[in-house]
Image 1: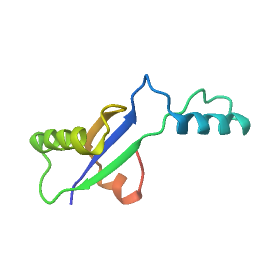
Image 2 (image 1 turned 90 degrees about the vertical axis):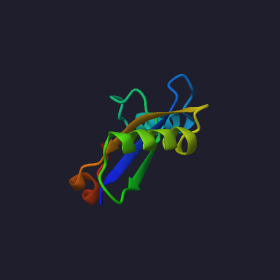
Image 3 (image 1 turned 180 degrees about the horizontal axis):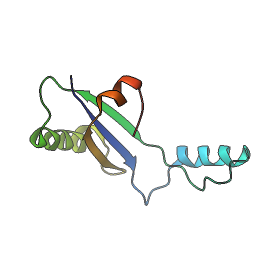
Image 4 (image 1 turned 120 degrees about the vertical axis):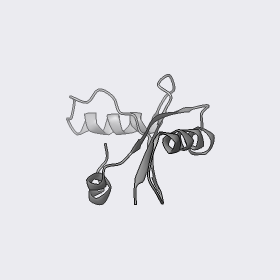
Amino acid sequence: MPTIVVEVMPKAELLDPQGKAVAGALARLGKSEFTGVRIGKRFELTVDGPVDEALLAEVREIAEDLLANTVIEDVVSVHQADVETVAAGETH
């Protein structure tokens, strides 16, 4: 069955306290090449049937209405996942 992935991130202009904490931990571990971290959410919706542009538009609307708090978050991606990616548990 196809899977649609929705990725939600905090709005760029807002402080991301979780990201800031991880960035600080990386610096303490000597990983100074990373200058910032932002932490978001990933949703995987399994679909019973084919995925087309109309369904992706419907999922984007659902994401804006239900999955993201649009006051502080942006829906940054709605796309069909690769079968290999979902099976392996990898992220984009």
